[in-house]
Image (cartoon, rainbow, N blue to C red):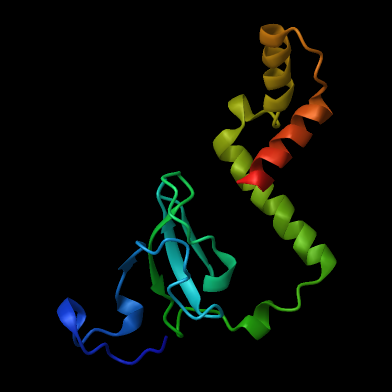
Amino acid sequence: MTDAATQCGENAGQTVDSIWFENTHPGACPFVEDTRVEAVRRNGDKIETLAGMLDWRVRGVARDIVRSRVVPATDAPALSDQLPMTAPAFCQKAADLMAERGKTYDKGGKAERSMAATVTAFNAITGRNLSEPEGWLLMSLVKRVR
């Protein structure tokens, strides 16, 4: 995709970076994979990344991409400014993201403790003796199978 004006339909005369595209593609990435895009998930989360890094399948779940647009070149930081990311910078970015997510998901300002509660409830219902690490392993497998 380029910043050149589109030539057809209701979007005639608009630049590509000003057009939001509805995601009706059954798994196909609608952009060149190294195109910088802004995308909105079904649950309302917004993401900005390279198009090839996203899962474009439409499955009817919260993480589905429902619309996207090319990020204007003036808005997008140069990839050379972002890469290569050093290991400490990568770990710090991950820690910052976890802290930010914790503000949303942790109850009463306490650290994440939902797996222990989940495993306790599972064991009570099933009569099994699943450990907390086994619960995390199960969660990891569920996410990988998706």
